[in-house]
Image (cartoon, rainbow, N blue to C red):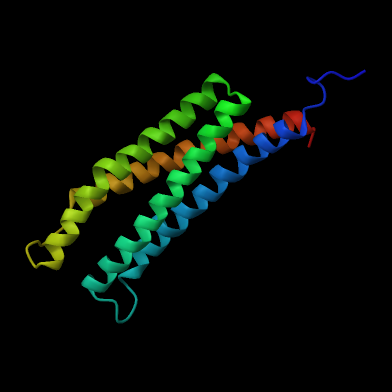
Amino acid sequence: MTSSLQTPSTGAKWAVAARIYIPALWLGLIIGISFIEAPLKFTAPGITIPLGLGIGRRVFFAMNMVEILFFIALLAGSLKHGAGKAWSWGVGLVGLMLLLKTAAIRPGLSARTDAVLAGNSDGGSLWHYAYIGVEFCLTLALVALLVMAAKRWIGITGR
């Protein structure tokens, strides 16, 4: 006779798999957009500042919507299938950074973009540095979640 501790249910396996896939996909999104596309966009021939800023607004809005969906999925999975203390703290930290990025920094970036497009601004912006800093911290938190989930997956599947 096997106990549920020895043989995890299919639902538990899917929950752990989702805990791997969601942070991995989210990391790919951040690396691909924030750390690769955004800086390179302005080096492409024919991309003007207004065009680049317009593209950036749309891309980052869409990215933030996907991130919110990823966070909701992480949170729902954690609530439904339980989570350890470290996982809960990690998910909470990810949520806090997402909230900071979406509710505090993006509005500042939007105002900055409006000023640049209106010709009322020159030079760099602290809002961009804040966004990059939060993205970097979010990346580290997602890597930590991914490592925790991978260890749990190995523990329950033996692979």
